[in-house]
Length: 236
Image 1 (cartoon, helix red, strand yellow):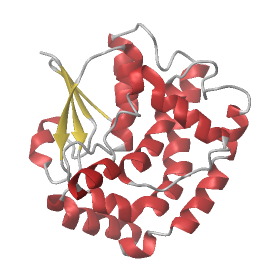
Image 2 (cartoon, rainbow, N blue to C red):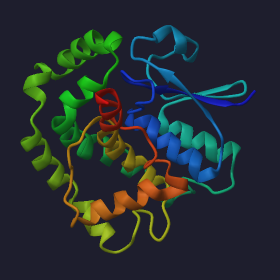
Image 3 (tube, helix red, strand yellow):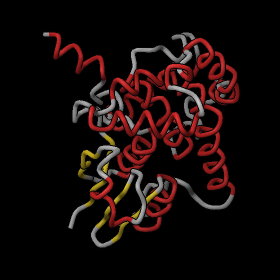
């Protein structure tokens, strides 16, 4: 049995926008591992019920099922040790820091910037679920939470540590990309796929880093279908 991963899709099946799934896609590309990416919607809970949870990514490798992007990194290093992602000791701890940095410092600003764009990209079958679940979590409507000016301001401040690191090296891991880069790039792919918003200026070292990340591993990020591609195709 081959490898497969359940991968969140939008109103067009080609739109794959989960930041957590993007982490794993980069990790698999880093290791040169093939994988089938199975389109999955928020409301397709039964499709992943075998994993005993309700969120993606769900990674299946033969008779092994692994959930949570960081745990998938750990699994890949254990089972496919060539081209390690996390490394050992301090290197693994550093990567774990970047996991939380992406989720708790970067994601809130990105979310406030693109929230209604994400809602527009969500599959119609999922929109009631998306609105209800997010508004319950936020305690506010999607429209109230969507604030690009505030989101970009939050993100600008949160990016300062990245800028410092990227002034020293082309990637967060140094001369070559690694787990820290893959754990962070998911937030940027979330925005790239669902929105036309510019998160940073082209003079920002983060912009240059993201362009390098898009081209990495044969353009795994740059070749992703975006909402602007989908809307343009429908407009024609």
